[in-house]
Image 1 (tube, rainbow, N blue to C red):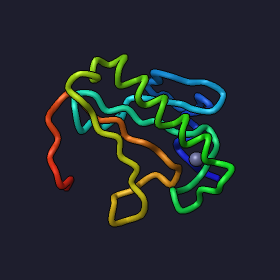
Image 2: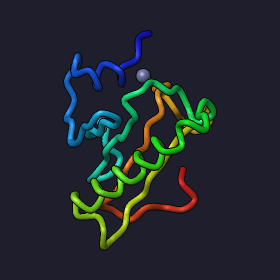
Image 3: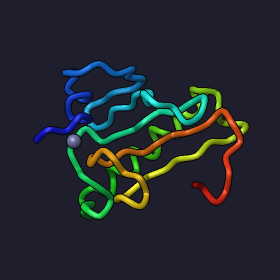
Image 4: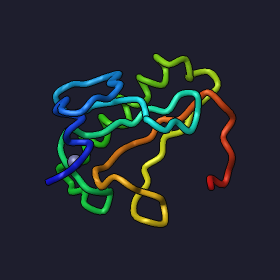
Amino acid sequence: MDCIFDKIVAREIPADIVYQDEKITAFRDINPQAPVHIVVIPNEHIPATLDLKPENDALIGELVRAAAVLAEREGLAERGFRMVLNSGPDAGQTVHHIHLHLLGGRAMQWPPG
Ligand SMILES: [Zn+2]
């Protein structure tokens, strides 16, 4: 399997990793869309949200909670931030390994583009 995020988790390719534990890795997006743009991923390869199984429920909870902790650490708690999970081509998912985008540091638009 040739997955760029698996290689980041294994530290086989460089990334600006801001958090890593036995289940989750978080790193700064190489093409940031906001002053703070961190990608939070499960270390386990799960292609997309449609592939989630009940046994992944706790993992996704930890993913969201890790992103919230990072948001606070990045100084976003007061002004707010956005978490995004893109799934499939219309949403612009380009890496087929579930990833949560944490975006903040500027006012966001709604609806998103
Ligand atoms: Zn992967």
